[in-house]
Image 1 (cartoon, rainbow, N blue to C red):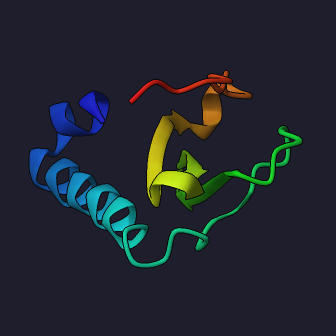
Image 2: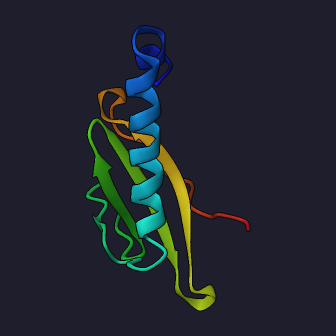
Length: 86
């Protein structure tokens, strides 16, 4: 987003709000995202806000969604932490 901000700060700000809004929607709909194809874990999901992937883990026992990564799609496959401490 830094690249966008250099050229057009207004567009960068709007996009930042779009990312935040997408994350906030998980509070009401935690299973909104699809399963992450690279993972073999039913609790690791993602929502895509092109060109970014917002990867998160469902923590059902705590009724929590933990954001693991916000990853630009052009950067290849993301490394996803196996254990998140909160």
